[in-house]
Amino acid sequence: MASVLAAYERQGATAAPEVLQARQRGDARLTPVALQALVAFENPVAVPEVLQQLAVPECRARALTSLASLGPVARPAATEPLLRLLATGEEGWERARAAEALGRVGDSTALKALRQAVYEPHSEVQAAAVRALGSSTFRAHAEELEPLFQQVLTTHASPVARSHARWALQALSGEEVRPASPSEPASVLPGRGPDWQMCQGPTSIHLHWEKPKAPSREGPCADVPGGDSASVLEAMGEACLVGRDDGEFGGTLEVHEAGRVTVLEEPHANPLQAVRMHGTLVVVEGLAHLFGGDGRLVRVEVSEGRWRATPWVELPGAPLAHGLDEAGNLVVGTTNQRLDEVVCGRAGASAPAHVLRVTVDGRLTPVE
Image 1 (cartoon, one colour):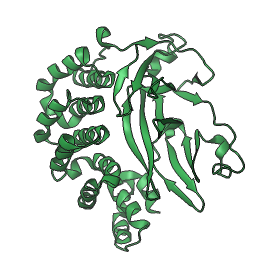
Image 2: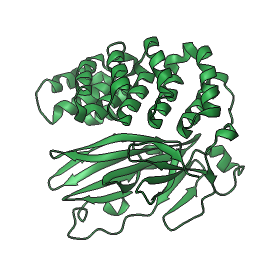
Image 3: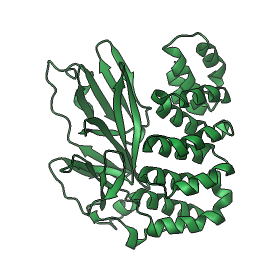
Image 4: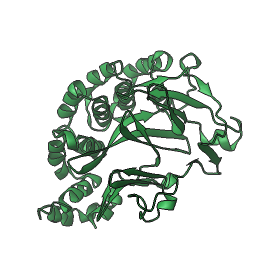
């Protein structure tokens, strides 16, 4: 019931007293779900516990997502811990998610650190910092940030950072800002190949990937309910990773084991494909819908029998296709084409795609 109420987010906030009572029962299964319900309600009671989670490496991805959801409710208590993580986090995704959360939680004290992060060494952190600075949190500083966005749009090496700068400038001016052609990464017009196809509808673009082959009757994925309609069906030892993509209505990512199902992500995920990269299982997620597309890569890992999904790399649009290069790095084709361009036929039958290489440490580089 707590999970259902959380799905209604702030609309379920009237149930906060009951959720608080449930959280005090000390039930190891109920307590984390009740906490997530309070986060969804944007209840300030959740802030201290989420900050405790932030200090635990295994819980850090969930805590960062929760702080971004809590937004101004977590201010100012979360600003200093997030700034510390942005400066000292061991992994690029940690620093990137900290920057992203500061776009919702941070105050003017975070401005200098985020400006510096725009040109820090990791491409994922750079893009997250630009996105944070372009949020409504820092709209009062628009005049001093506009030259930075212009500079990022025309000269920055990260295609994701350039995309966020363009959207920030568009929000400030109220007018469409076209990409700066000299800084655009290499583009291609993908044809229809054996691994993917794109179907265009009147209200959204649905990306259809090849369904997984029918699992063996002896394998861990054999008895998964509704396995034939899953977008991701990947055996992981004695467990099965199951992804379901419902387009604009979200989706789920779960691990099915004997007698147990672990939900790894919130219903807003759009898992499309699973790929193994340098021994790590990576789920490609994304959706092209309405005013553009978005996508990301999520790492799925297990430690001491506990599964978790870690947001890893943000993509500059919805993923269309993927492959591995000779070094084992992931290569992804994406599109952020606007829906009106598709419906009105201004962009032709095939959507342009950026082709990007993702290295083992989560850096994005354009493919020549």
